Length: 87
Image (cartoon, rainbow, N blue to C red; front, side):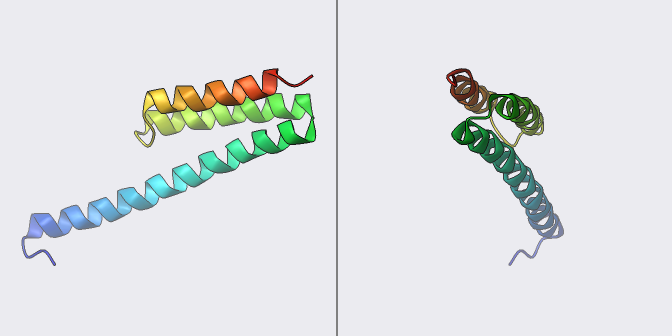
């Protein structure tokens, strides 16, 4: 355990940021699952709406520093590709 006051603070701050990042990642995963479920069900309109919502959540996560911008671009691209491939 840390003895120095600043080190103790860093531990607390790191824990708080870890919790925040976990919450954001969990939220993003939920939105991505909704897109995947809509694609699997074959509901194009629902998939488009879910894709729009997922894109917004991914972009927010990127701006908060949870995901790298290239990771977000890749995820959005793959989701878009799946939605657009629907008949």
